[in-house]
Every structure is written in structure tokens, then in C-alpha cells.
Image 1: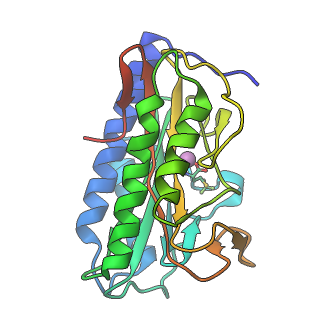
Image 2: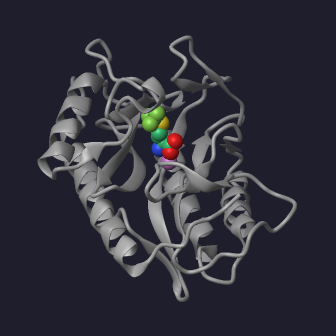
Image 3: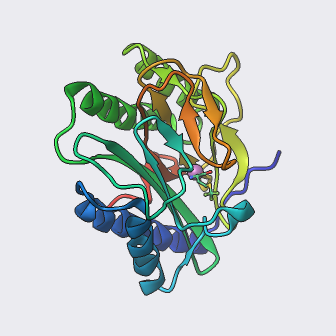
Length: 250
Ligand code: MF3
Ligand code: CO
């Protein structure tokens, strides 16, 4: 395993990639409403990404057929947008997107409410987001990688939710997926020491029920085995001496 340390120039480009991606997700949030199809969201997302002269990094990645992963309700991640899938009031929808800007990647995800949603669904969204912030308290030079994982898991499990184990966060830079892998569930060792200039995509995927997931026959869509709701929150983060810098938030 080798974890790359980015130079100042690389960090500048990753910051630019991050701000562009934050803008894409902020714009997509505005169009989420009952009646829109997941295909339409994907099309608008791709247009916005290309309007910044960026490449949608997920498109054709290992054959993935869209620019935005759109996962509804019990879909955890990697849902494929289609013209048939219409969002309904009360749904929750996770949008995961990545851009390549001047060869540098950013990767981020958020779960949004479609119209009015249940208190239970809103709590799942809020806890998933907060678990990211609990984790990045340790995204700092001198901390160890799995302190991030353990902080996420401890927080999430205190609500009785399941932390997905089959998918993990990752290093990011000139590739979408670099070393190290970043699990969101408890590890019984401390992992590598963090150094400033490392860049990570930290991405808790949290189920309202059991942590187990399965793949649908499209070989992409991951769903909860028990049919419970699932939420996702991800940002591209830079490790510094003073703590985390979140690159994909405005
Ligand atoms: N954010 C996800 C990840 O980090 C999405 C990539 S899957 C893709 O793995 F195939 F759609 F690109
Ligand atoms: Co990712």
C-alpha cells in the first residue's frame, strides 16, 4: 500500500475540483422534487459538470453507465439513473458524484429528502452526515487512519443503525480510488499514521436496519438486505497539521 502526499500545486487543483463538485451537488439539490426522474437528475448533473470543463469521473468507470449515482430509499449506493424511476414525496435520495478537473479527482455524496419525509428518515440522514464530522475530528496529521473509522462507527451504532461493511472510503487524487481503504466500521488496530497532504474520500454509508447489503442483478445497485432505508454522506478531505480541510463543501 502506498498513500500519496500531494504537493501544494496538486492541492490547489484538488481544491478547485472540490469546489466545482460542491457546486454541482448544491445545484442538483435544488431540482430534487416529487415527479423528477433519476435520469433527468443525471442529465442535469452531467451538463453542470461539463459546463466547468470537467469530466464526470463515474461515467464508464468499470462500465458504470451514468455520471451521477442515484440511490433511492433502500438503495445504498451505485443506483443507476433511469427514465422510469420517478421520485415520490417521502423518498430519500442519495446523489454521489465525481469530477475530474485538470487530471485531479473529487468525490462527494449527500442524501436529500424528496418533499416531506418521516422523522425516522430525517434522523437517518442527519446521523449519517454527522458521523462524517465525528470521523474527521481525527483527519489530522499525527492521528491514525482507523481513529476515523472507529469514531464514525461508535457514533452511528449509538443510534442502533448499521454501518455498511462491504464498501469503504478511499484515498483520492489523480485516480478516483487510491490507497488507503477507509472502512466506516470498527477496526481493532490503529492503521497508518496520517500526514499532511494526504487526500481522502470519507464516505459513511449507513442503514437504518442491519448493516448487510446485496447487489441487484444490474451488478451495480447495492441495496439493504432487510429493505431498511440507507443514507450516504461523503466529502473529499485534505489532511493538514491543524485538522481536516473539506474540499467538496462551499
Ligand atoms: N463515490 C463512489 C466511490 O467512491 C462512486 C464510484 S462508483 C462508479 O466508489 F462506478 F459509479 F464510479
Ligand atoms: Co467515493
